[in-house]
Image (cartoon, rainbow, N blue to C red; front, side, top):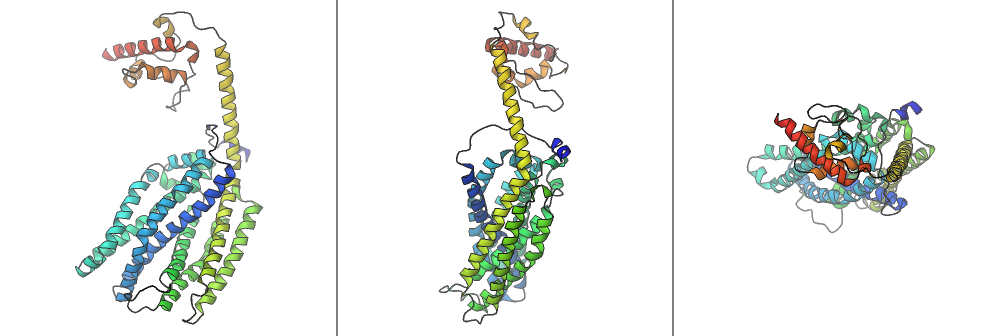
Length: 442
C-alpha cells in the first residue's frame, strides 16, 4: 500500500478557505446531484424509449403517437438536467478540486467536447420534436428516425464522459497510466457504472411516464388505442422489469469497485438501500396485479420508496468517495504544508539578507548566466527564446523571476530570484531582451 501511495501523483494545493462549512457542501453535493441525475435519467431514458417506440410505430401508428408524446418531455427534462447540474458541479469543484480537475485534464479532448456535444444533441432533439408531423407526412420518416437516433446516441455518450471522469478522480494511483479518454475507460469499473446508470434511466423514465401519462384529468385522446390504465400498466412494467435487473447490475457495480473505498459503512448503506429496494419492487409488482379501476393508487408510495432508495445510494456513493480519497487528500495536505513552510523559510532568510549593491546589468546577469546562454539551451531556455516569448514585456520576465512556475517537464524548477530586488530584476530583464534579440539576428 505504501509503495502504491509513493507512486501516486500528489499535486500541491492552494490553502484557501471554503465559502461555507464543509458539511453543508457535502449535503448540497448529495442532494443537488440526485436532483440533477434524475432529469438526466429522464432525458436519456426518454430518448431511448422514443427511438424504440417510433420504430414500432412503423407497423402500428399508436406507438408512433406515443413516441411523439414522450418526445415532448425530453426537451423539458434536458433543460432541467443542465440547470440542475450547476449545483453539484460547483460543490465537487470545491470539495475535490485537485482530484476533479486532474481527471478533467487527463481525459483531455473528450472533456472539452462536452459543451459542443450537448449543444448538438439539444439541436437534434428540437429538430426531431418539431418536424415529427411534417417529415412523417412528407415522406421523410427515415430521416426523422435517424435524427432521433443521432440525438439518443449523443445522450448516451455524454454521460460516459462524466462517468469516466468521476471514476478516474477516485483512483489517483492510476493517473499516470491514462493517455486520454479512451484509455480512461479501462480504469476502475466504468462499464458496470454505465450499465447501472442506463438501467436507472429506463426505470426512472418508466416510473415518471406511468405518473405523467396516467394522471387524472389529462387529455390523451390523441393517443389512439391506449387507455389511461393501459399506459400506467405499460410503463409500470418497464420500471418493474428494469428495477429487477438492477439486482444483478447493482452487485456487479458494488463488487467491481476499487477496494480503497470499501468500508463497513459503505456495505451497511448499500445493503440497507437494497433491502428497501426489494420492498419497493414488491409494491410495484403488486400494483401491476391491480385491476384497471385501481391501478395507480399506490403511485406516490412507490415514488417515496424509490426516493429513499436513491437517497441511500447517493449517500453511499459519497461515503465511498470519501474513503477512497482519504489517503490522497492527506498526502496533498501534507505536501502543501511542507511547500508553504519551505517557502516561508526561504522568504524569511532572503528578507534578512542585505540588498545587492548597485551593479551594472552585465554584473547582475551573472546570476542568470549559468542557466541561460544567448542561443544554446543550458539548464534553462536560451535568451533568443526568452526574447521571443517576452518581446517588449520585461515586466513579464520580472514577474516570472519573482515567482517562477514549471512549464517544461524536461527542465528543472527555477528558483525564485526575488532577493535581487525588483529594480535589479528589471535591469536583468531588459538586458536579456537585448541580448536575445541580438543573438537571434546573427
